[in-house]
Length: 535
Figure 1 (cartoon, rainbow, N blue to C red):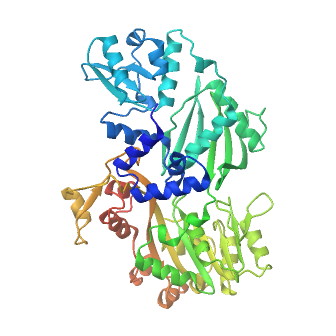
Figure 2: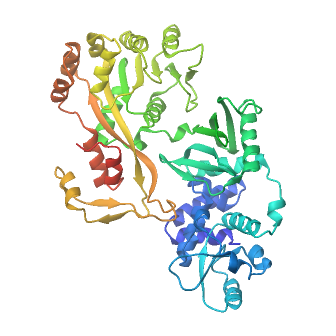
């Protein structure tokens, strides 16, 4: 096994942690009375696999995930079990190499290589993987040749296993956790930065079912019911100060129940307008508008585009002791102190909650989503009577929000009199700051930058910090549409979208902001093409 101090040193060597990061973590670890390794993991939201990948790069060996390891059974029989189990080493099949390939937990241990060279009478090429991954593959390999290992006889603790899954989900910055039932196993996948990726461990059918039962107990679901979909929720804490809400949905499938869990954040302190990715000019204008005493501001975009995060960032900015803020949401994604939050349910709708809000002397109202004409009209009338109203709407552009409100039955004069501005947004993956690299853009790419003087462009590379993906985290790109007196009159007169677009001199389109963020090295052309905003 590799000592934690060596894993940390490798991360420092690879530029993942600075000397200042290390000093701050040491101070924090002493305060929390926990290991430095644990402190660094949680402080930087880095799963343990990132440390091992950094160690592999530093040692000059290739790192393999569990799915990349294919055991060579014929060579496995030649190795003593003490070397396989005691040193976590497995002979594997690797294409295009002439030597015997062996995956180990610690490639810097010279004695392991010497032993292997004696056994196989020749040169050895070492690869590296996580100890848990090697153990899992080893158990499966031994089982296939009829050998029972000690770890196979150990019963899985569903409580401990679920705690580990939640811990990894947090460190991966996962928004959703999927339990997918297959014929003989249960695969776990995390949605990270909008993309699904496999969890390092595949559960056996029996183990997976016990973990699913644990989830159903925590969320108040019927554990005996496996033929009907169920919904529930619970709150989970992985350690002091790291708590989040879990929304659970089950679904019967051919090979058993599928469970999907949405991870809802509780870290409201991290929600700031400065970190959502808005340009300085737009942020200045947006900050000015959200401080108005009344009116309506809309955030638009498809599902999963970060609308709620933007709204919560606004509320975090404007909440104070002398304002009464009420919200109606489905679901409540962040719990915020000093704000009264209402959850939409069977007996409470957006419209009914809004009507009730007006009897509770609000200063600011946040409506999770405008879904119907009644909600839209109540929201606009509330903004006309001295309230500042925030909400979201499903449209593809800012100006289309005006058309959408009309389609819901709202009168143009009411829209024009209340609307202060509309922001449309999308989420793209953010380039990893440690490994992103500049390159010479191709001709078709250069054409995209014709309106910009700066032609620098970056692409994803991959390193230990971003788990070889090249991206880490997400950033929003924005289209902004601010309603001044001229635009307000045009809306009230019922003009069409083209007229509004031509009249809005400061309309900043999604494509402009997207390209600007590519030039700034925050994302890539591939990412902005993926969400189809180039025009």
